[in-house]
Structure formats: structure tokens, C-alpha cells
Image 1 (cartoon, rainbow, N blue to C red):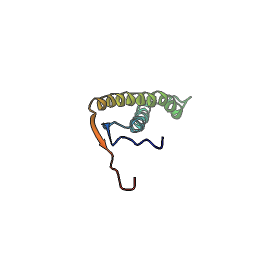
Image 2: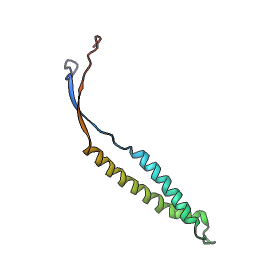
Image 3: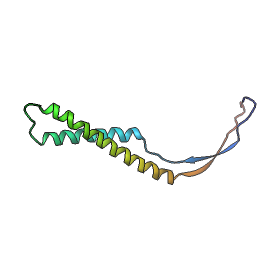
Image 4: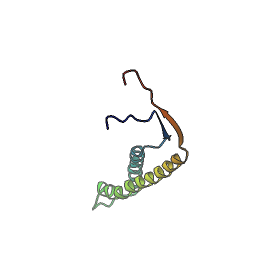
Length: 97
């Protein structure tokens, strides 16, 4: 609609929300390191080897810690929605508009 001009003021909601990607990366690394430490505490089965055991337990360790990170992110995101503030945004009409 080229002829319709937008309103000069608009109500907006401002909140600080956490980034999901940061939680996934950090908790993925925590799961990787935690699985590495827990796997290296015990002797590996000679028929399987350390790498095989680590890869198997990584499926659970990394996935579980990422799931825990996403749940924490959801809780923090819900809290940020409750703390959102409303503001009025005004359009600055420059002479060229």
C-alpha cells in the first residue's frame, strides 16, 4: 500500500531475552567435557577401546546436557517475558520523507 502512511507513534514491548544458541553451545561443551572426564575415570574395555566408549557415552552426555540447557533457557526466557516493559516508539519524520 504505497499511499498509506504508518502511524507516527507505536507501542512496543522491550525485554532482554537470552540467546538460545549460546545455551546450546555452552551446555554442549559442558556435556562433552563432562563425558570425557567421566569416561576417562574408569578403565576401558580392551575389546572396545576408549574412543568407542567415549563416542557411545557422548550420545547421552552431550544430548542430556543440551536438553538441560534448553530447559534452563526456557525458564529464563519466561522470566524475561514477565519483566518486559512497554514503551512508545515515535517516528522521526526527516525532511526527505
